[in-house]
Amino acid sequence: MYRTKVLIVEDNTVVAEDCRHCLESFGYEVLPISSSAEESIKMAKKSKPDVVLMDIKLRDEMDGIEAAEQINAKFNIPVVFLSAYSDKPLLKRASQVGSFGYLIKPFADRELYATLEMAVQRSKADQQCRLDEEKNSIALKMQIKKNLVKIKDINTTLDILMEKRVNEQLRTEETIHTNFKLFVFPFIEKLKKSLRTKREQSILSILESEIVNVVSPFSRKLSYNM
Image (cartoon, rainbow, N blue to C red; front, top):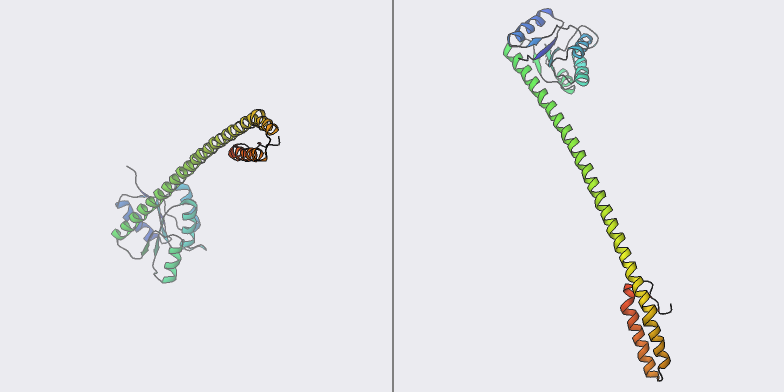
């Protein structure tokens, strides 16, 4: 059965050992205790704990909040802070680096257990949310890609249909143009030569205009003068 791994970062040996005994009694796997910020970052990288129990006031130049910020950013490991202080500036700094909990010394065993469990469960929930977001993002990108392919296919089909329609229109115009050139216009010219009165000529002119008006929408090439 998998046991949750905890990294304790505490420079007070008595407090560190008390935490270790408490956590082991609750079934946690406690990694070797770290007493400095720099060392805790190295151990977090090497051991990949599920949660870090971090004292804020450490004896080196870097404090626990700075170490927690790096651990959270680099390895995405939740950090619960330990401190004998509860002043607002300290709490604000801790919250700004993504703290998963804050325990004021001294604390009860059950309080430690509950805080760590909440931190671990919250971290798992956050990771699942990120995974779901990534999956949704990938699915969305795939759907967009499919839609773009469909749109491209539709555009290609429309282009083919449009080209076909244009070709059909051109063939229709060509047919109309040919028929009028070969049959209709020569016949009208022949009639002109046989007409004697102005009235007959006027009627023929009206007939010519009507023929052109009826047929011209279907033929861009049509011209009586051709």
